[in-house]
Image (cartoon, rainbow, N blue to C red):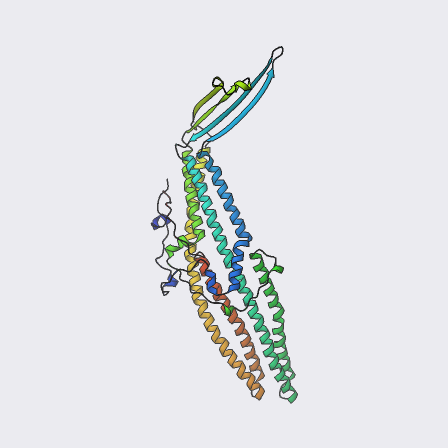
Length: 451
């Protein structure tokens, strides 16, 4: 029998559980986010899309179907814990050569029951129940991934819309400069080469628009699939990445992650299932004791069928002890023990992966926020430089090559700012996903481990 507290004794895990996340040392205590954490982005449209995905997503529906299968399997393997009863009724008529007709009517109730003295059936049933629990956590894992995928697709839609607006604004700004350069050409202060260079910049900005429009439509199609719709039936209003709020997420303690992440909880349930399978495999070496009984009425005439003298019964008990089975039981035990070791290793990996995911997400949240602030400074400086350059162009006091470089710097800075904003939002999503996507009440600690 395996016994050790996975959560209270680190030695049973064989890994070190940190006291705090390294990247979260400076974060103050905070209340855990609510189950509908996506509302922190302050987008009604995003909330509507996520709520629809939770009921219409095909992957979630498939995961729910697996729960139904696991529950059914639990019923199937739990059936031997209860007696089996059958009712039988028969009527026969026969004749021997030269003899009279003979009739026999019989009704009987038979029952059988295997005494689970060694706990084999109970252990098998418990393994199936733990597998059903794991299926529920697998469904939660799929649900969290789906919510994050919907939010990511929605952010990509907004990012495409922002980039389209920037591209159109850039075309407009470049056209203004082109007009001024042509005016200077007419005045004899600008060359045809300088006009051609600016025309190239205008054309390159225009060429981005079809590509960005394609990306926008592709992202909307991805979003439609996640909510179980054909793309033609989805209308996304969208807006801008800068209209979204950026929630502050406190990761809590690493030990809390063992309860919060559904993939870890699923791995834990799988460990418990393999523990029970080993117990059942060991119990199979011991004798099985079965009780059978039958009782009813039998008569050659219907009118006498239910008289006391027509009653019959039989009771039997049997004991079966495996003697030699070609090492079948030994192989089954070794297989179960191997599966037990595998599940424990996968549980440990899930725990360490969870800690790693949170640390990486925390780093991404912090660094992406810095990057966005710095990129905003680049945009502000580039815009001021462009505005000064445009003014000097009207005055005829700027070198056109310098102005061309200034324009390109501004266009690149605007694009990079959108990329930085998207990365920051995606980092927050990654942190939510790394923390399990929601904060559930802590269940009782399951006792399991390796002897």
